[in-house]
Amino acid sequence: MAKQDKWLIKMAISEIIIRYWIEWLLSLVSLGLGFVLRTWYKRLRATELGVQALLRNEIIKTYNNCIDKGEIPIHERDNLNKLFKEYTNLGGNGTITHLMEELDNLPVKQKSTV
Image 1: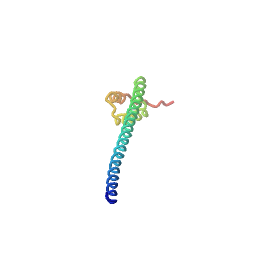
Image 2: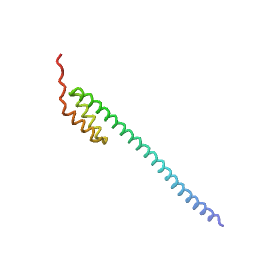
Image 3: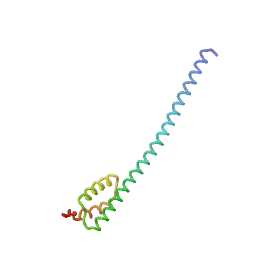
Image 4: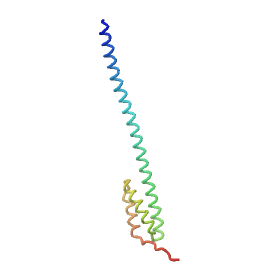
């Protein structure tokens, strides 16, 4: 076999190895990236659900307090509206909507003039 033929064979083998190594490497990088993105999405979703639960809890706590008193301070109403807006943006359900409607019907607490 001529020296030039050996050189061509080595080059062909080198090209094949490089091509397959690059495909393998890209496959592994894609697999790793997919794992990272899936983990990130799960954590993001868990955070959203956690924040939604905290908002729901705060709205219910304020609801119970105001219903017991029969009135709602204006600052509480403003705060609840902001909490409710973010709660619904996170996919909150209609149960809290019903509570908010009841709170909207409560009279606003008047400042005492002492």
